[in-house]
Image (cartoon, rainbow, N blue to C red; front, side):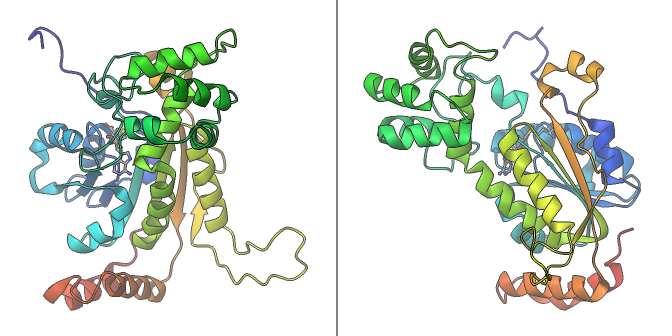
Length: 351
Ligand SMILES: C[S@@+](CC[C@H](N)C(=O)[O-])C[C@H]1O[C@@H](n2cnc3c(N)ncnc32)[C@H](O)[C@@H]1O
């Protein structure tokens, strides 16, 4: 790299809105499930000082490396873990990170990943068709593109990309295989949808679909949201920033369901579901970036922030924690387990 060129960075999105929604306060314990370049994390650490702690998770070892350098000055206040947020509960149990005052998911990819030639996320940069968040994952985008049947590809592109031309695209991909690079795939898609260009680049939705499939993004999000609720103490905040409608739909439905005392189908005469609300919405309406933020950082334009807070009694919280330890196996927590549970009883309220 040219030494005069500034190092690539990721500009965090909706930072002040996130801090407000998380209700960050000195001494609070927060989890950033999508650490990225550490932008949100550093502001959370600044505002939770003195005494604040941050557990930062990212599936991408490169992101952890960059964030570790950026957050070095915060010393023991940070614990950075290279893992998938689908393992959120297990991580908290392993590192005794309870109770939690706030959990943030800033979904999707960082600019560091999008602008990389070797990661394969961008249809504008030539590179291998990889798209894995972590090199430990087995399946790459090239594997999916070159081994799926035409029908499977069409289904994937339609489902995860909401692409209207999924059949034509899948047909061209199969005809032009093997496809090994991002630009080769982008050109194949351009040929498939020739004459039907819309507002966005014709490869946008297919690339989104592949990324979601390679990283099982929706599945991991659904699982992690449930785990996050279990970890939050009373009044603890759950904040999710999403960047496409499939993610946002999952978050919206999850928060709506979890903040409702009845989830019986509409028209059911008497409630039979036995469901009780575990969350209360902090903002009734979704929060989006201001026009100024979008102008300064065009990548923020599709961001949607949703926020909720945990409602739970002390007894329920301790029961949940016991259950988590039980599910994690008898060894979980080790000799510290009784101490951890005792502390939980005292500290269940994070308000
Ligand atoms: C939009 S960036 C986050 C940027 C960050 N908030 C900042 O201020 O720099 C999303 C990050 O989440 C990570 N990520 C996405 N899905 C993940 C998952 N299932 N588990 C762990 N990390 C994930 C990506 O690797 C990426 O670094």
